[in-house]
Every structure is written in structure tokens, then in C-alpha cells.
Image 1: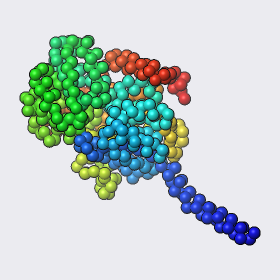
Image 2: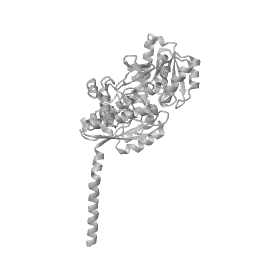
Image 3: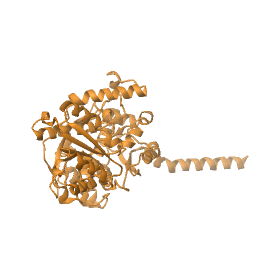
Image 4: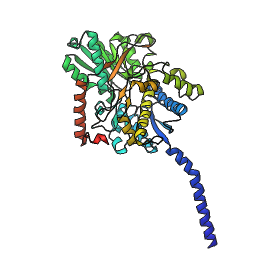
Amino acid sequence: MKLKSLIKGAALAALSLSSLLTAPAALAQAKEQFFPLLVYRTGPYAPNGVPWANGKQDYIKMINARDGGINGVKISFEECETGYATDRGVECYERLKGKGASMIDPQATGITFALTEKAPNDKIPLVTLGYGLSASQDGGVFKWNFPLMGSYWTAADILIQHIGKKEGGLDKLKGKRIALVYHDSPFGKEPMPLLEERSKTHGFELLKIPVTAPGVEQKSAWLQVRQQRPDYVLLWGWGVMNSTALKEAQATGYPRDKMYGVWWAGAEPDVKDVGEGAKGYNALALNTSGQTPKVIQDILKHVHDKGQGTGPKEEVGSVLYTRGLIIQMLGIEAVRRAQERFGKGKVMTGEQVRWGLENLALDQKKLDSLGLAGVMRPLSTSCVDHMGSVTARVHTWDGAKWNFSSDFISADEQIIKPMVKAAADKYASDKKLTRRTPQDCQS
């Protein structure tokens, strides 16, 4: 009996010791806001994917170092390499979602499409800044998708408006030929409904010229451009496809000043290897670049100067680095906004962060306080509007650097909103979903 009591006591003591040893670790883990980071640092999309990923990491490190986290809650993260492949992206999502993921930036339109049906069940919001499913601007149907700052429909609309202005008015587009040279994937096909709508309205001919992924071989595409002689080319490319397209345009003699890229075809990796050969090329811009902004200076001071930078110091502030920073900032501000309702100093769940994303209110004063003065436009979301902003500018490559060549242009919501609602309603019908009511939005 004594022996049994001794064994039982020893076991209880061991259990207590084990609890004491593991409790702090569990407590520490529970006190961290976890962000899964889907990335592609390898493969043909790496030149664009790397600075994007580095901007996200460095912003997290800066918030931890400078502010001690989000109202005292430290931030943790883990990267998972997708190679831009949809199947690998889904695998990363499945592996990381159980670690306390409160939001995910899929970093690819194809991956977004695959995760859109999973997110409602898992209660993890998808932040798809400037990409993804255009109809997901409609929060009444897409409760868990947030295409913040713009979609491919707003991008296409802004480009057509800009080209129309250059021609002397949208009515002057009648009889023109506009070619869409696109990445043959969900990403590249996404702007087509908007372009087709504008084509019918203004009477220009839309030529669709696909490029097989990843886009290193484009001879046949640019042969079509040479044969059909479009007045303008819209480049819907990503990664190596962009620089290859500019080299092919140079080889075939197509004027680069008649080429306009989406905002994923307007960064340093797209033009630096082409240099003077890309001079005159235009692309949309969602954000500025450079190391002048205070937020960039804070990252240099609190992260890179301490040897904690994720990538090369000279890359900090580049176009895609800054965009990655903005994406992470929006995620962190969604957590901060959620804490205002659900409790400061607490780790927020996916459902709570979703509420925060739906109630963002980043006016100019707030952006200034975040060190983002001049970097981006104010953004405000709601239950019905999961995008928050529909503006962008055009910048032009001068052979050595990007320069803004237009004022801010707003997508025409008289065209966009009916298209978004129709597409969202169809999605809801196909998936047998019920549109949220105004009463649902109060919860």
C-alpha cells in the first residue's frame, strides 16, 4: 500500500512539474498573434514574390521591436513556400491554419479561388490586396474575402479611363484596338468581364492574347501583336512574364509607351533588366516607392540597422516591398481595430479579425500616424464594401526609375457596382448561399 502511495505521489509530482514547465510555453503561445505567410521565394515568380514577402516580415519585426506588438500582444509568423502553385498553396493553408491563423494573404489569385470555399468553414479571412476574385468586393455574399485597395475590375477600368483621356475622351476609343496580353490563369482572365463591358460601351475591339505560364516563351503572342497592330497593349503579367514581354515588344518594335501594365506588372523586377528598352512603359501603381516615408525609416532603424532585416537593405522601400508592408499593416490594423471591440491586449480570433477588416477606418490622420503619409490613399471598409478604395495612379519607367504620370483615377462605380452585385448574386445562387441582411451586419 505504501509503495502504491509513493508511486501515485511521484506520478502526481511529475505531472505537476510537467504542468509548471509547459504552462509558460502554452501561455506565451496563446499571447501571440499568429500570421501565416504564404510566399514564393523560388521559381519563375521569385523576383517579384521575394520583395513582397520581405516587406511583410519586416513590418511585423518592426511592430514587435518598436511597439512591443499590438497593444502588448507580440506577433509571430511562419512562412510556407507555395512556388505560386495552387495545390501547394492549399497545402500550406491546411498546415498553418491550425496554428492560430487569424487571417491569410494567399499571395496568388489561383490559391485565393481554391481557398474561398474553405475560409467560411474555417472562419479565417482572406486578404487579397489588389488581386483575387473581383466580385468579392461584395461583403453581403463574400463575408470572408477582402480584396482591399482594388480588384482587377477596378484596375482595368482605371486603365481604360486613362487611355480614353489620352485619346481626348472615351468616345475617341471607338474603332480602336486594345490587346490584352495576359497570363493564361485565373489572374490573367479576371479583368475580361470589365474590358468586355467597356468594349461594348465605347466601341473598341478587344483582342485577347494568352501567354502560357510562367511566360518565358512569348514569341507567338508578340507575333499576334505585330500582325494585329493594336493601338494599345494591356499587360496582365506577373514575374518573369513582364520583363519577357517588354523584351519581346522591343524586338518586334511595338512602342513601349503604348503598353500599360496592371499594378502587378509595374515594379522594379519587371523593368530593371530591360533598362532603356522599357523606357516609356506605363503601369498602375497602388503605392509609392522609396525610402523617404517614416514607416520605411522606422523599419531601417528598428530592423535593418540591428541586423534583423529579411532581405537586402537597398530593396527596402521598393514597389513590391512597400506593397507587402501595406498588406501586413492592414492585417495588424484589423487586429488593433478588433481589440477595440473585443478587448485590448488579447489575441484575436479569425472571426474577430474579420470584424476588424470589415470596420477599417484609415483616414489621412491615421495613415500619417502610421508613417504612411503619401504612401497610400485613405481606406474605409464596411459590411457591404470589402474593398475600401477604388483609386490608383499610373507611373512610367524613364529607363532608370518610376515616375508618376497621372493623378489619382477612381474606377467608375456606376459600372463596377452592378457587375459586382450580379457576379456575387450568381455565386451565391450557384453555391446556395444566403446574402447577408443589414441586421446580420450588426453582429
